[in-house]
Length: 128
Image 1 (cartoon, helix red, strand yellow):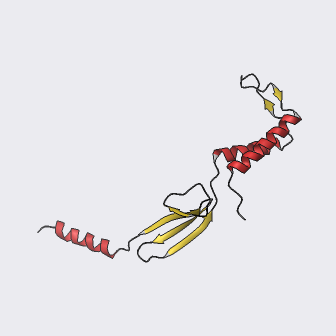
Image 2 (cartoon, rainbow, N blue to C red; image 1 turned 90 degrees about the vertical axis):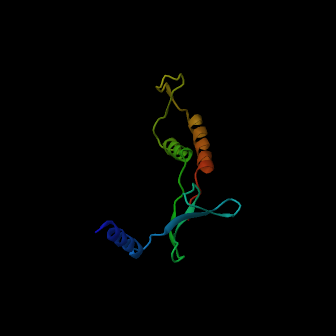
Image 3 (cartoon, helix red, strand yellow; image 1 turned 60 degrees about the vertical axis):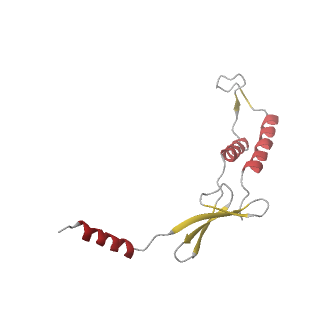
């Protein structure tokens, strides 16, 4: 008696009886021109995630996800926070890796303005 055949039939029966997990997550966002886009990988823009059940066609919207911040955004925010503090900030003017002097008030103001512009340019807008 060949047992491979009944085992294969049992496995096939179990596979057919088990519910299929045919669910796909897609991401939706609008670009600057107002065009809606969809993708199966999360974009860097502000987006919403949706789970779509391929068997029933139902869509479940997950919570709106916070836009990912770029490295430039994180650096500008970090620099701005430090510049707006009261601690002295050293400058390495000769490239030896050690601070030679501290920022002057005028340099601190200039760097603060530069990093504020960096936050506006590189960071996603705040969502209400």
